[in-house]
Image (cartoon, rainbow, N blue to C red; front, side, top):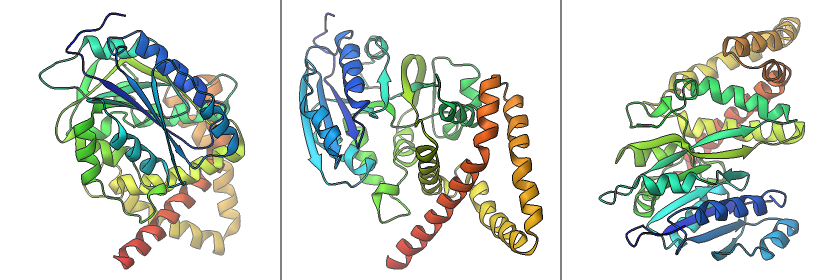
Length: 339
């Protein structure tokens, strides 16, 4: 792929924690996308190992991607800290953030390069396709994702959004490209409800700061595939973590889901009181939840397999996610008291 002399340099930052199965694939697919694009001449890859296990370290040590590679090791401090380390170490004017479970599409970076406005470097959020083959947990998350961001996902297209529409569009540092300067400013403005950054919402809060400066583009032309957890234990653990992260991202005035957060606590306290007083009524509610979940998935026009997965996994998800929100509330209260 030929390059233009005025094409900005691209740095790809990938935080990784215990992903020996997928990090090699993630890197290989990212390099393919680079080589298919105008960024090929001097792109670099920055992989931040966030205190991974030995199998992951072995895979990282064997990487030979064909473009400049830098490995950064740190003790386990969470994805936000790993991303920050990678962004600060990056030398490119543009930074592509990727998760280790993500494969960027082969032509995605050329799509971005071909749409460059050299007067102002762009911000692009990846169009994420969740890989669902033989994975009911991925089908569950695909249904959740579709319901949350239906405005875009019902009609994927090349468009953009700012602060006014911010909570109506999918966004995340799973696959996200932005000027390094904008990311550094967002890091400087970043604030969490928690003291421990391992539980911080590094997607919604970080990108909101960037959206205040310039509109964020999204398109199926800049796409990636995401691989979800594939076991019940990992699904429950991930749901618990996502509940905590959700509170950090949306437990703030002015966000789309802030009213939901406010209502959650009195409603859940009432449910606990009812459970203690009338346990049979709670059992009936739990038994009814899969039916309600199936009806909801049908109204979202999901496939039969998606409906079944969403129904069967609704109870463990609700329990873990709600517990995660309560954990977040306790962590936020502790952090506020310490401050």
